[in-house]
Amino acid sequence: MKFRTEVDITESKKKIEVEDKIFSIGSCFASEMSDLLQKGQLQTVNNPFGTIFNPFSINNSIKRLHDAEFYIEDDLIAFNDEFISLDHHTSFDTRYIHQTLAKINARIEEGNSFLQNSNWVIITYGTSFIYEFVPKQKLVANCHKIPQKFFEKRLLTHQELTESIYNTVLNLNDICTNDVQILFTVSPVRHTKDGMVENQLSKSKLITAIHEVIPQFENCHYLPVYEIIMDDLRDYRFYKEDMIHPNNQSVNYIFEKFGNAYFSESTKDFIKENFKIGKALEHRTDDEKDPKYIEFKEKLNQRIDAQRQKVKHKIF
Image (cartoon, rainbow, N blue to C red; front, side):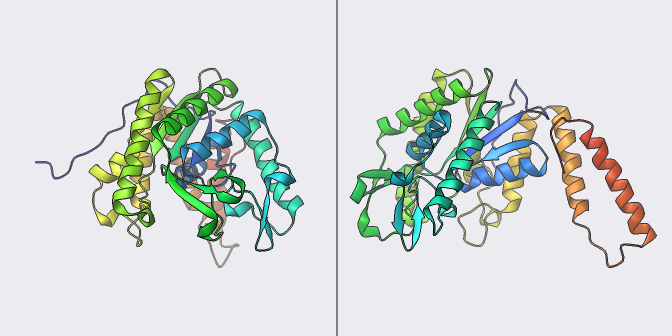
């Protein structure tokens, strides 16, 4: 007897290997998945523009990375004694224009270089809503807590969504490795401030647009992350206290399902051991000269060395 409807991720014919490079971009859920990949000591770069949510802004970011197009002073605005880019997350904001530009352009350089050798790209869309900054008539990725009166909010049209997704794929196929695999997901994080009905409309538009575009490309795939949370883990015990964001248990559940479908056996073993090593490295003692602790450290270093022998990139 079953008491829930499980949602599975279709097993991929192509597998993620220990030396593969994985680029991710999009909502905060993309960051959580990337964090787990990093803990597993795989090569990743996540969100060179910071957390962004809508397909239009994500496409703009990918285009900038593809072209290695640096930002200049005219691309920024000043607000609350800080220089900011409306294409970026607030974490790039600084009090000095040259510092903001330096932070932004360093990540563009890093992202461009990493994308050229990326084997996998994970894109997580969060919303179909977008804001237009009225003074510049510019569609933005982040409002930076600028007063609402300066913005107009609307849903992206179906054409805008599909064109953004399509162009994102074209740019990725051009800059990444020849056999790059692009995985699309919709964030399970509910944008309740938009309204519950509006959030469902927003998510449904994303899902529809993705499924219209990806059949046109052999290397594009859909991961049912949204469906796993909504239909498989449909219980508030799998959410954080805000009742909006999935908790660690549900993120780990999705990561395990993703790994079973996409990791090679050697990658599974590699990540599993690195998770254990990472946990062991958190161990602290009041007496570092204790013979038992010294023995523990020696054995741990041997395990780390054994893992380092398996890859060319730097780990731990």
